[in-house]
Amino acid sequence: MTNKLSADLVKQIDSIFAEWDKAGSPGCALAISQDNEIVYERGYGYAQLEYDIPITPDTIFHVASVSKQFTAMAIALLAADGRVDLDASVRKYVPELADFGHLITVRHLVHHVSGLRDHWELVRAAGWRMDDVITTEHLLKMVFRQRELNFEPGSEYLYCNSGYTLLAEIVRRVSGQTLREFADERIFKPLGMNNTHFHDDHEEIVKQRAYSYKPNLAGGWRKSVLSYANVGATSLFTTVRDLTKWLANFRHGKVGGKEVIELVQKPFIANDGETIPYGFGLMLAEHMGWQEIGHSGSDAGFRSWCGRVEPHSLGVVILANCATAVPREFARRVAEVMLADVAVKAEPEAVPQANPADFVGSYLLQFFGKKLTVTKEGEKLFAQFEGQAPEELRYLADAKYAAREARVSFGKGEDGHPQCTWEQRGINMVAKKLPAAAPSAEELAAYAGTYYSPELDTTYHIDLCDGELVVSHQRLSDTALVPFGTDTFLERTSPGFELKFGREEGKISGFGLGSGRMRHVRFVKH
Image (cartoon, rainbow, N blue to C red; front, top):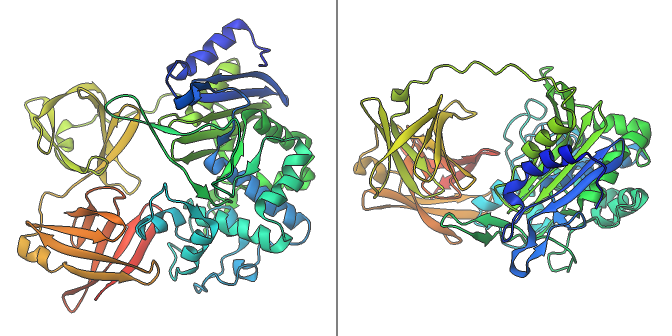
């Protein structure tokens, strides 16, 4: 293993990963490069818990969305070859995609501004489990059935995996090679990334690979199974050592050359002139006075970060096999250690004084499938799950409190709706605040019925049982619907979609199914 750092720097860096540096735990692989040379690398924890196989810099990880920068580079290379027009309609290359009445370009896919719904949300809504075998063919069929967009292309940024699966398909159709073959020939082999490939066969044996894990709330670890056979948005298999070779390419430009390297690091300018800080599979951010250029990844129990800090020519790659690891945060802490002399520490933002009375109410914690009720007695807050005794929340700071086995923080989501986060064993579980009023049993009965979605080719049944609505699907577990406003409900348990019902002449006619990256998939009442 390479180490060109002082003992003091090594001690500070290793302390960042201390919780993973122990027997019986999944963990992380780390590589730090300076001026294109690895200066420190190490493994912490175990790649395979069943066989006590430790993580090393040679361990191969599924790196999830870190894959996107390679898919985007493949498109950029084809554009440089004159074989792909970034501003042409996606339908020029993939005519099966529906005509939505708005031009969706290849560039829109690259920057997550296409308006397409995210296919992971679509397949879950159609009844797939995330540990099913999911192929590129499955995903494209789902995308090709869509007839509506989340928004007008180019008008806003919303992270979308569908776009990158389509980009992989464009590579295949234009080049005559699979993304795996193209990337191997044009990117991996030229850079000497000999332990890297796009994993398009879920049954393929890969030596020295890590498996993914998630914490068991009762203690210990559980497998987090991943059987993907799709590429583009995900499924790159690689090592921290290989990824440092990729980071070096942004300086020497062996793959792509100067013009392509400049292209892939440019942000997108939205229709209204706003700058979208996302390049070709690269997140662009400012931190501590420097520019952070890279990408994170999250699939099953795999978590990853591969990025650079400029203009300091510092590269940090962290690949983890535990769902509670936070590689981007770790990478920033590593950078702060490595660049302590030039770090610009921002003044802490003023936080408005929280009013505990604002936190009182009921919240739906879909992870547990339970309501959490917060009450106030005097100056104290209490939290109570359904069927359990209340417990006092101990004040920590601002809107943060401690329970016996968790930490609770109150705030608002991106949509401005009040929520709380219940953090236990490293798992952050978000709970939305529920309205105080709820429909009567008679009012609920109007929502019962059978609903069909042509875009998902799937049917949901909603029945009134013991005073609450229950939604069922042939491949999903039955779950109750919890009122969340006028004609709006949340699924009590995972996958936790929101249903907004519509009416015609006062009668329920259907609903729109939504989540963060999928808006209003229409279901019609039969």
